[in-house]
Length: 200
Image (tube, rainbow, N blue to C red; front, side, top):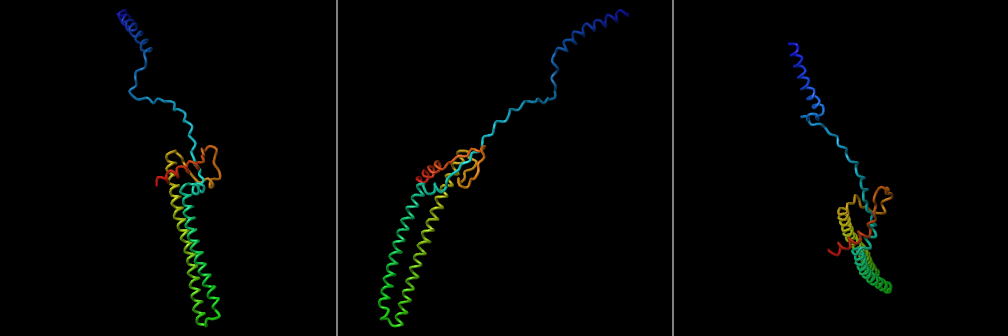
């Protein structure tokens, strides 16, 4: 009986030992729970420097085709108004000379009437000068605002299309960090404004 038990134990050992050895060599059983695997994250790429555009607004406004045309238009209107003022001034001077040459012959009542007539003509002349200046200034302001609106629209479209963070007026920028990609866009915007104006 003792022998039988020993033999059974020995058989179990002979069967179990190789199984245990195989089990040790085998890979561990797959876990039913998901294990977190840490994947190394790639190093962040160096950020692109922000693009900033700078323009000489005064230069574009005066040297663009629309700016040159406005200058010619205002110059022509100014010449017309000046000619009208000069003509009225001559008439006023002629009237004054006529009144002064006959002043001694006029009665006090006639002198007063001529004086009032001349005063009204002087006031009309002053109103003409004032109205001419105002008219010229209003036209200049109105047309300049149109040019500025065209420049702003052109700048906005160019900035969006070319990934600019900011486009500003050159003379207003006092400092730009070396890490910023600052570009002078004056000639590019000037050409774009000319192209846009031709299409109008």
